[in-house]
Image 1: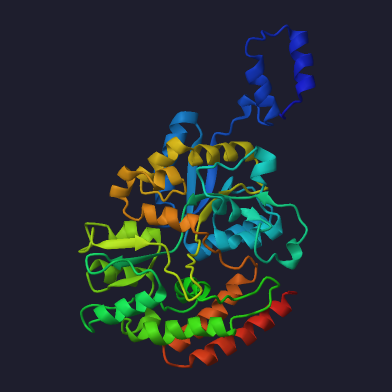
Image 2: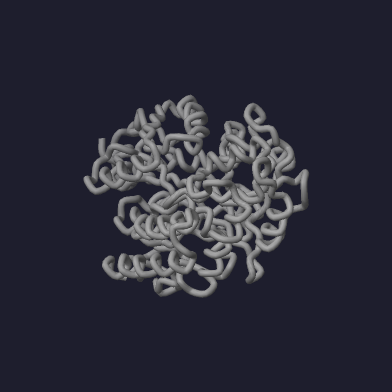
Length: 439
């Protein structure tokens, strides 16, 4: 049955002599575009396989018990999820009612027009308990920073709601020293505590492409460098950017682990957990899964967490890695899907989501003293959100740019080229890539 208008509903009920005691509720159902009799029996979510969707899978049955709607979570590994969503969206297929998305995918999905605006279509509004940057990262075109040529002048809409409140932070052994306030202090502490063979001064996440770039961008921004300026000019070879590269591939490498060019996040967290690392950057999921996991960690309770330390320009910049939930335009159950997002993002359900291992973005939860005892990084995550973290450049060319930069940084860490060669080669290749894409 197709939704009916308010006027048609009034006409039919008048003719039929309907009882009007339930009139407001029924009118609300009509106005929503989804009559109560049309409630779907199932909603299908495309999700990333791993720690990021674990809490989602645990709370989904609660929604099913409350509404009678079955929540089917279809999981894919990270790379496969992106490709699956792109293919599905391009085909305008209605396979998924909800899509779990890494925030760097927003430029691709937003430019493609593949997601239903949550604000204008379903009435989503900003909640003051959630930092504005969390809504900004789910908005397209981006509210600040350079806007891709194809998106300039288009109206901004909220396309995704954060369900994994990821910001890259800093971890250190608080039983050995105070928190480093700057990258200079990070290096000084690394030199002080570095003991080859037993304690690594700083763990460099140096594996090629995405891993080393994720480790490097907070350093780059904190040094006053960047990949692009506000007009999409490539500035990775600027003096400030070169200084950041040298700090990574020369200074930090000198107090880093052997074979840093092969280290990924799991290796970094393992070294910290077994007591063989003093400090490094860290994602929240690494903390819960490894560093503070008492079943595998020897240092649980000995590690401190803080926002990214300040660079030479006096400020530190964390990097966002939020996972968002959005409604594909092709879904036949858009209103029901939006209702699920509202339910999941509500304060009461978010508290239960946290109990299942979820990473929230609500400040009231992140600053809750009891929850901080259970999740010792929560307060640092709240400060990281409020400090104004950066997101990766909002361009649909980011995958290619990240591959270029990450390949050259990895080669410099491996001693195959100098820092100067790494930035010069990266800049030349990125400029060529962006020019070909019309920037």
